[in-house]
Length: 486
Image (cartoon, rainbow, N blue to C red; front, top):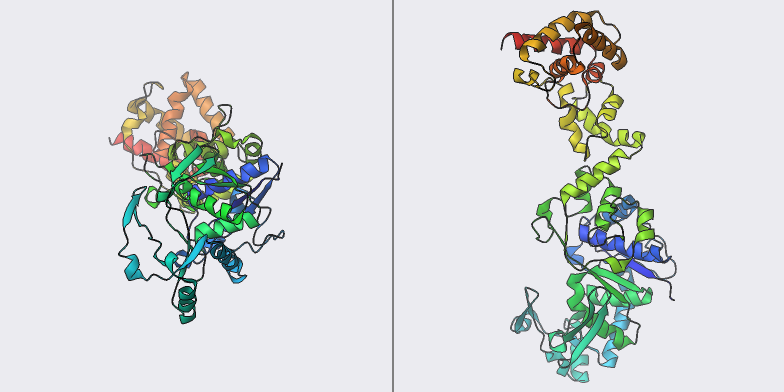
């Protein structure tokens, strides 16, 4: 068997769309599962859509997601250049376009915009496209030479048949046959001398010995035209794997408005790259078991592209957040602390609390890093709260009993010097034992007073340890005042 070679060939047009990242991931997994090579190629032939800095975004995304390529612009293994604009300068596409012209499989087209505007249009997959009428195919060799000498702008078009059918095989969709009447004479070389995406892909995939082509199913309709190019050259056709659409929760195409259409969008929402990779792997593919958490190495072992589903996949942000929470729980504390620190500082207004203790409080309680801010912002300033919170049926507390507890505990805590969690906890337990009540009877009003919240990421004494003696006492006094004046 031939060694599997898959390629990821993005265009530098902005942030990396989730669909592109999934293609890259699946190409990587297909190659690595079989001990093959993952090739990275940059398709920058569409100069109008080129975005400054987008190439760096692609490199950074591949690095953050761990998709290490075997070959690429900075790793030439004899198949370079790996940047299409550099391949244009090397004359690669012009050479193969000329070969097609000589074979009668392509032709020069000199039609201007005015003439093209008069052509018939057809609706293909919801888009209105003009169908070229092969007008320039009828030009004699002499007429073509004359126009070329005169410097008249031209494109080179593929010469597709208008009768009969073309068939191809896709690993997921099976055998597909289309009427050749649907195959437009697509442009291979544009008037600026650059190849179109469609032509450059075929030439590059052949020259780089790509065995498996993985891409979105929106390219299914173009595949017959690609195959006719392969056949015209006498080249081997690769294995095709067309991936299902990714939709938002409303089953619409994932767009920028969703807020999570690109890798960077998602990272900015506090999601870990490894969680994104895990989640995206499951957007269309399912393992044999019900397992959902996979490292990249585990995905390589498990991944079988035959288990990719043809149905559209829904990008469920809630599920991604849950998955991210699982990754955070399992995370090394030092790495978590480093990533959480900016959010912790923002939450507490930069006050000099023990940030590591705050990190310990929230690590198992968040799904995304921004969740930290509302969880611990009460450390910065005591929020306004209703004294009704002191009443808790399960703890058997009322506003009256809570006032009594706070009044009793205040002088004890004023004398306390050791404000470590353990020391404070023992002090409150001693009071509990003296009164002959349950722990919650005391802990609930104290925690309410020092936090002003019903739900907190830690218990009363853990909160007091971080707040320190002065702030803890101040908040308990405030609680007493609120209860006395209700």
